[in-house]
Length: 286
Image 1 (tube, rainbow, N blue to C red):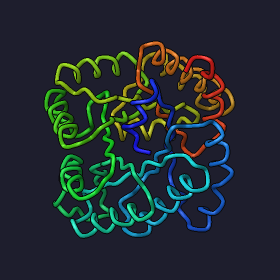
Image 2 (image 1 turned 180 degrees about the vertical axis):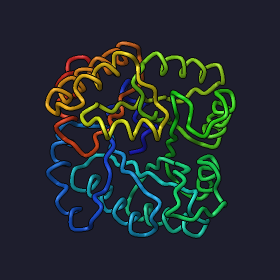
Image 3 (image 1 turned 60 degrees about the vertical axis):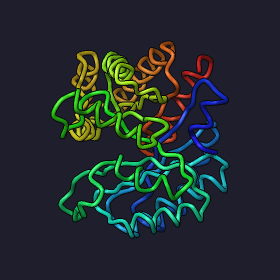
Image 4 (image 1 turned 30 degrees about the horizontal axis):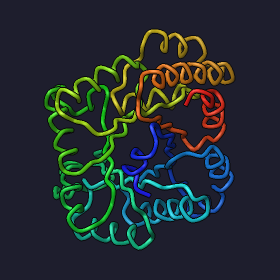
């Protein structure tokens, strides 16, 4: 089922993001995580895709196929384009199509010295424009409630996002953020730019201080004062940080849910305990 069709039949979606294990042998052992995640009845699960050629591609597609065929949950496959040419992108698309994958999260991809940029697809909108005429995928796009680290200013970023939607992105999944006011202001900016597709907020619970600081540096998210106090007080107490971080995430999600948003996208970091606790905390208000 295409993600865009889900919004025709329901008011809100619940979705998770996971990443493929680094080793093929570990791919066979991910079922315990998937069983718990899928018991929570997400509408879809997105699977990340790195800039590593066929090895990463195969793991991503294998995991997406398992989610679809074994657990009967719709997968959304991340597809980056900065490090690939047209032939490679076509190869990925044909393989996904042959495996019954219907949904793609179109991404430019992060710049990295480990992979050469092909300079064929400079933006995710270029990828959508290239694939849409020839393949029957539903395309999702990413968005940043706070500025993308490479963005010059909000106006240019919103214009680029509008271009992505006009190219065919039917749904937008947001990068993580910790200040809901930032997200609400971003949604208002999108309305002013005539961006009228569902914008689903992405939330990552804080359970590891070093990990979250790294993620924040990559995606340009800011620390609200209340969030910073949690990190400062509990960063050296693993159990306390887990509990405080989960409480913060739950309060953030509840505030989003009462504000008429189209869904919640949870960055699970492959931790089913996190997903279960969040779902238990919001089961009566979703």
